[in-house]
Amino acid sequence: MYNREFFIVDLFFGLMSTQQKIYDYLIVGQGLAGSTLAYTLLQHNQKVFVIDNENKNNSSRVAAGIINPIVFKRLTLSWKVNTLLPFAHHFYQEIEKRQNVKLLHNRIIYRIFTNEDEYNFWQQQCNEPHLIDYLSEPKKGDFNKNFQTSFGYGKVLQAGFLDTNTYLDTVKKLLIAQNAFRNDDFQSGALSIAQNHITYKGIKAKKIVFCQGWQDAENPFFKSLNIFKLTKGEVLSVQPNNAIRFNEEVSKNIFFLKHITDYKLGATYEWKELNTCPTEKAKNELLEKFYKFSNFKVTINKHQAQIRPTVRDRRPVIGFLANNPKIGIFNGLGTKGVMIAPWLAHQFALAEINNIPAEKEISLKRFEK
Ligand SMILES: Cc1cc2nc3c(=O)[nH]c(=O)nc-3n(C[C@H](O)[C@H](O)[C@H](O)COP(=O)(O)OP(=O)(O)OC[C@H]3O[C@@H](n4cnc5c(N)ncnc54)[C@H](O)[C@@H]3O)c2cc1C
Image 1 (tube, rainbow, N blue to C red):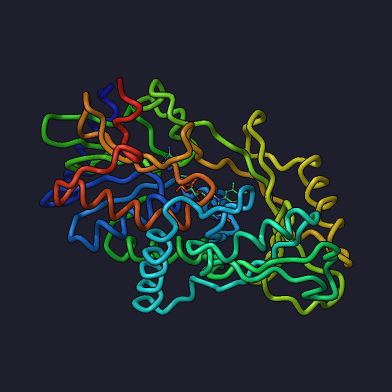
Image 2: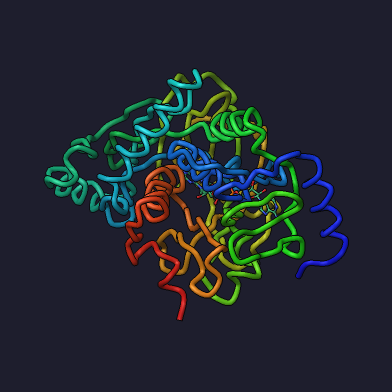
């Protein structure tokens, strides 16, 4: 695993610092997962160092960053939403305050019904005690003349989006200011694992945590555990061809969202062709669905594709390998990474610092025989 070439690199970096620092955690990947974990561990006074290959098109940067407390398919609450949502708000708002940046943007989601049954089901569900804070009464008629609502619509409250690009840039700036970030393409061959620490190109840490998003599916330490069932997604950044005066989100099979400088139209779900290439097929699918409920045309500014780190049992995954306890993972943020990441990082910190084990549902243990 550890050859002479990397020994020399190690030696070089080691000599560069007169007194070599031992970090608590070396984190690989600075998407939503790595950023949130690093920030949380710093809050717990842990020493972290982050490596990222600065792929400007990672899943977290392509994502619209939507926070939606509802699963539309069955009109149920999203997993653990009553815990995750306040946790996420508090976490991002604290960074907003401390760093003087705007990260969270509130949006009402206007859910357009496709038939009478959907209207009736919404009517029945919106007064259920667990949904009452998230769903409005359904309505007939238009909420905006630019959208067709033949069967009416309902509003989802407490929704919005995270400006993921500003978030990642903010965390990266903080890490750089602490000399705790390096642009590097991690190669497992350069990692050496000793009894009490790991070393990677001159960085010494007690443990290493992989936050490589979908690329952890190919990570030699985790590949055999068969954790992931990845999902490709494509999204368009668009500009309406005429002024539409709409600053919220519309949902009908796909979403149309007023974002920072333009609108986002997405997203697709593809389980077979897992690559990061934008396709004509996905673009046409999104536009076709969009023109079924909109009264205006759009111009495409950008078309992006990425892979969501979705897990076989649809739950995130954290923990360290039983047979290699210096090697850990923080991943599986899936389709709702923005909402899940802050709470999950807190669970990671509780397990590591306070010895409170993570629930089995989110623990790496469930994949280990
Ligand atoms: C089209 C689309 C739309 C989405 N919309 C939403 C949404 O609206 N709301 C929501 O909550 N979630 C959404 N998601 C899901 C969300 O993007 C993910 O849950 C989340 O971003 C995953 O974050 P991550 O940090 O695990 O992965 P990533 O964002 O992929 O980050 C992994 C990082 O690791 C780095 N890396 C990988 N390998 C190496 C290496 N060898 N060396 C160094 N660095 C490495 C990568 O460059 C990257 O920076 C969407 C996803 C897609 C694809």
